[in-house]
Length: 356
Image 1 (cartoon, rainbow, N blue to C red):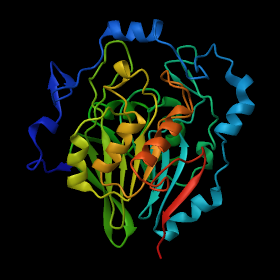
Image 2 (spheres, rainbow, N blue to C red):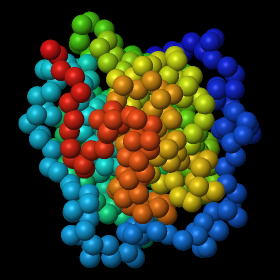
Image 3 (cartoon, one colour):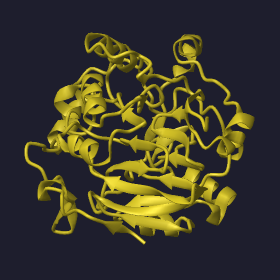
Image 4 (cartoon, rainbow, N blue to C red):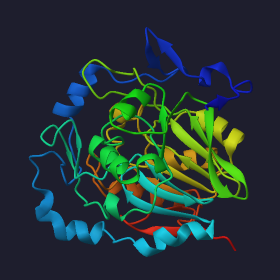
């Protein structure tokens, strides 16, 4: 059962609808117009270095990509045994797909295991780094959290495969307006939440539940021609008896993250997007750049952060290695160690805490 206490939350940080569609409730943030989309697509220079559309033969750069963005095979035995440690560890699958293992639960974020994202392969973006493991390789997934319904965060093939493998073992936590889609896809145990609402899930750890809180972000939703913003978008704050995890999904920068940090921080781990930010005149509303990602890290009071939403799909115009380079330079400037806001290889696992 979804619950929520928003008495201490300013109304400008609560979800709002106009004519049945969700809108950004705070001032100073406006999504780019259709004319801006055309300008971005047709006139702005794409410097990604990999393209990403169905017509791009980026495979000729395989040697370069293997050197710059190696893909590791996860230690599957270790992932399946980790529940016994009741600790905290994270594996980057790619883009915004992360396996977080904390307080006795295996939690998967925005699952995309397909080799492209989009309505179809010809109308989407090819993955320029292969997925490091399959859904069949995963340990039992207790919970899946969805930030929003864009194709690079909610892939119908991956959802069906997860449901086919795990069925009612898995609980799905999704934004308002996405629950019916999940159920039509075959998912059971679907919990639909508004901003600041939460739901508990038993982890059999110290007799306490893990709380899944749907928190705000600055973004938008659409899967078809006529459904823009009929569903909500957001971030997730997951509060366990031992650890706290934040998942940013997709977002532009806004001061709501200070509110989240004050209410639910400090976080032991935050997964923060750093890519798909160029050109800024077009992307600033919806995607943070590496500099803003570091500010977000501070706002959340994160002890550790993982860089996500880069190095997998070419969704914007910066070079595919630029987000990592810019992040490292910003951390150096801010005197924050790389180990605090870290970058993982695809398929790499990092242990942050164990039972001991």
